[in-house]
Every structure is written in structure tokens, then in C-alpha cells.
Image (cartoon, rainbow, N blue to C red; front, side, top):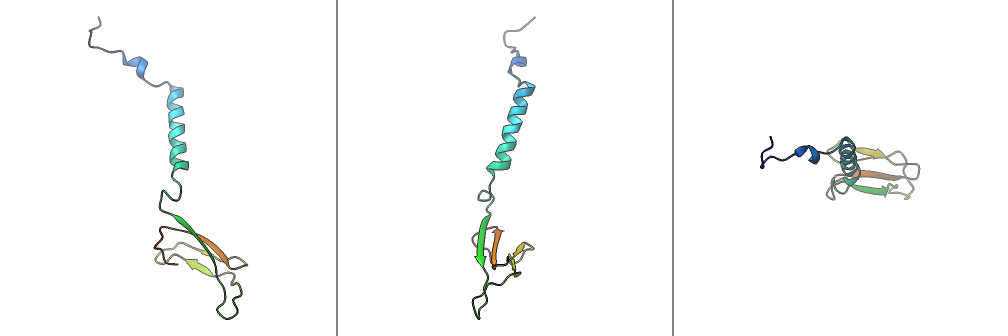
Amino acid sequence: MKFLHQKNYRNQTFSRGRRLSLLAALTLVLCFGLNDRALGQIVVSGNVTSFDDQSALPGVNVRVQGTNSGTITNAEGDYQIEVPSNETVL
């Protein structure tokens, strides 16, 4: 016997394929939707040169002050590093 106020919720649940599709979409949004800007990360790049003759300095450590995050300049003295905000000191 069915009462008038009862609903059949069986037809309103998501099928297995629908659940997997929703899970895949959510995963993509979380993985690719949270880019570096959303996390407050920015990329800083530059060139380290000698004060005396302005020649490139390869192998120089460039670090974010107060952290263990850092990088090393390449053969042309260039570096690129991700930092947490605009107020970061290298």
C-alpha cells in the first residue's frame, strides 16, 4: 500500500555512469581550475649579473627569504621561481 505523501526516490538517484561523470568533472575542476593565481602564487624571473662588468653569473642561488624555496641561475644567469605573493623578498 502506498500513501499519498510517499515519493519514489529510486528514480531520482544518480546512475553509476552519472556519478562517475560528476566525479570526473569535479576532479578536473579541482586539478585544473586552481591555477597558481588562485593559490596566490606568482612567477618571478630575472637575470643575475656581476656588479663589476655586468657579465652573467651562472650557478647563483636565488631563494625566497624565510623559506626553503629556491632555484639556481642557468648558464646565462637567468632564473625563474614561484613565490607566494607580490611582497616576497628574494
